[in-house]
Length: 178
Image 1 (tube, rainbow, N blue to C red):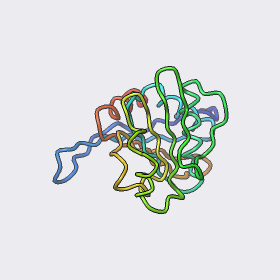
Image 2 (image 1 turned 135 degrees about the horizontal axis):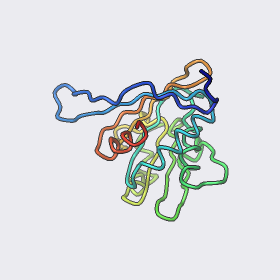
Image 3 (image 1 turned 180 degrees about the horizontal axis):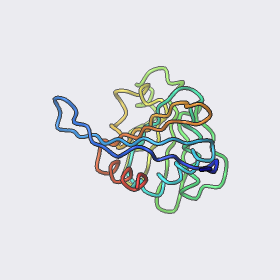
Image 4 (image 1 turned 90 degrees about the vertical axis):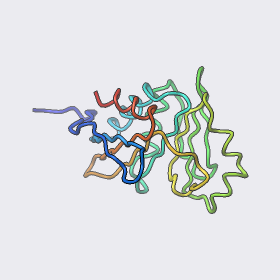
């Protein structure tokens, strides 16, 4: 049994967890990316199924692959140029025919109130998709996500844990996990 280097290993099932003391349901799905090409492909697959108006939080340690995943996501929408982490600019916009993607990296954010000065609420609308690296640094200013992707290093590859909190997030998970 030989696997190509770009295989995305889908060995886990989609499942539901009841949150205690809440009517909110969250749905999760796990997969692995064996290398950078697999991360790019996973990002591209999600881009095909995530709807406009969606918010995706990207979590994981430094160097886990959040920006690599985002590069794949943007390429999945047709972006051809470079994708850099907006560590110093906080946000990079990418315009497409029917949607604008805002890629935030809040790693260097000193105070969540800085987001208000940036006009953060203007980025979240029904014609955008917003990807946020280091979202915990923007709490409580950031809106709740539709989907969270937690990336962790797994040898040479990466473990990807997707958790959906809304119907939009769940619909995207159903598509990429099938």
